[in-house]
Amino acid sequence: MKNLIVIVAFLGLCAFSVSRNEKGLAQVRKVDGLDIYMYSEPIANFEEVYQITGFWNWGEVLDDRATLENIVNTMVRNAKKKNKKAYDSGDPKADAIVIYNNDRAIGIRYVD
Image: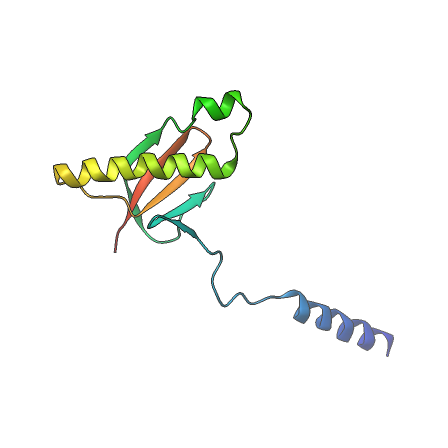
């Protein structure tokens, strides 16, 4: 009888510990039409379009205001400039930005 109670309690705990995420694994933040992946990559197939470097705004660094929000905004601004250059030259534009660390990211394009 004790074994049956232990087994039922164990199965009950297992049933509650399994969570079903019906929305997917994560929600991606979108800024100015670009998906932002921070320290992660999309599950969908993608190809690298260009690299983005030099995110720091030195005024923010000197004033110790280099927040994550400021870094993301600077990266989006740099990516939009690169997208404009790519569009003008006929190269593919990026659909998203993958941020690997504070000074390196890539622009990516989803591949079907």
